Amino acid sequence: MAFAFEKLIVYQKAIDFADRVCQLTEQFPRGYGFLVDQLNRASLSIAANIAEGNGRFTKPDRKNFFGIARGSVQECVPLLELARHRQLVNDTIHAEMKDRLEEIARMLSGLINGLENRQV
Image (tube, rainbow, N blue to C red):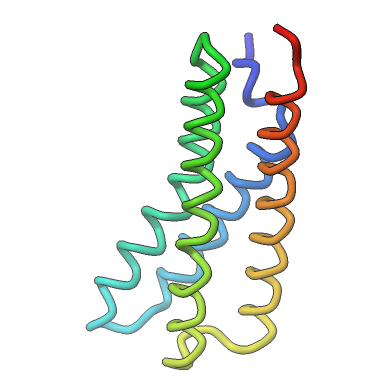
């Protein structure tokens, strides 16, 4: 039996994003552990907060966790930008990852707005 959040496309995209971040950061050179750790934590936080929010019983609780997930999306942006500046990821990969983040952010906004518009 699957958990309800596992069926959410935004959750699936968040997991794919976190997996891609893991793949990219494995190749970062020694000395960038701070960036590897922060980027991995922020990217995993997106999916983790979607899951946790979906498990909450009240709309305000769900909305709060979906908002935290959206904040983690925003957190990934400057971390990826620094990785690009330090030439740890090239422009193409940076653009791909940023596009993914923008899509996830839009989907999370839709999830939050959908909660606000629901009667129950």
